[in-house]
Image 1 (cartoon, rainbow, N blue to C red):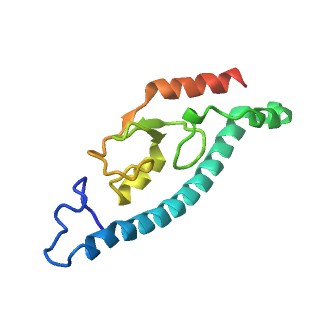
Image 2: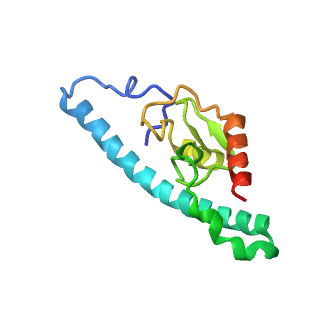
Image 3: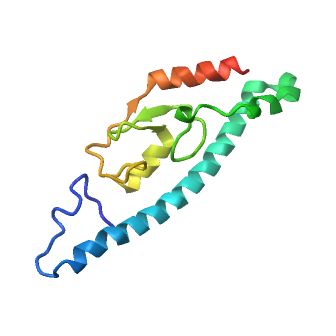
Length: 146
């Protein structure tokens, strides 16, 4: 397991070995990363779905239970969906790759990786900036269809 922060492969070369070793390593890492990503995405998706269901139930209250199916008909804009959880974001943050993610999902991702979930490239830093504009747009979209 690599724990490097942004210095992919630079310090790992240990002389000799020809071209076979380094050319296999990224493939092995890619396969592991893809498996881990799929596993994490599935777990995060289920967690986010349950959390969103709880929030929706709290927000609607008992009086609007008959209207519950209506909001599900309209799909949210793609920019409002977290690429990790594939769910509507409630606390979007921007990572070093310029993409926005649900805070809890990208924090879990960064707990074990230092790469972009979107590009697979090394992130230059792991600082997560709140995306206030996107959060406001999501809330406005939710209110407009409520």
